[in-house]
Length: 99
Image: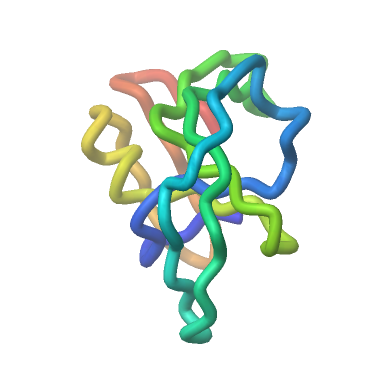
């Protein structure tokens, strides 16, 4: 799920990571005021619908969420452009439409 309010990229899927060190990274406060424990942090390679591979940096592994969250703020910091218009999302890296 693309989320313009997410502070970080989040996933509950341990299988998505190639490796990370399990540690106590604290808690991620969710929009419903629940706190979810962060059990790992690592980079994650994401394959988009257009077969474009992109690296998501510092993805938080939290086991207590149902949906994966991709932070548009972090994507913006990496130089990607997100446009929400007419109930659609367009995601670009320079002139390449990624999703």
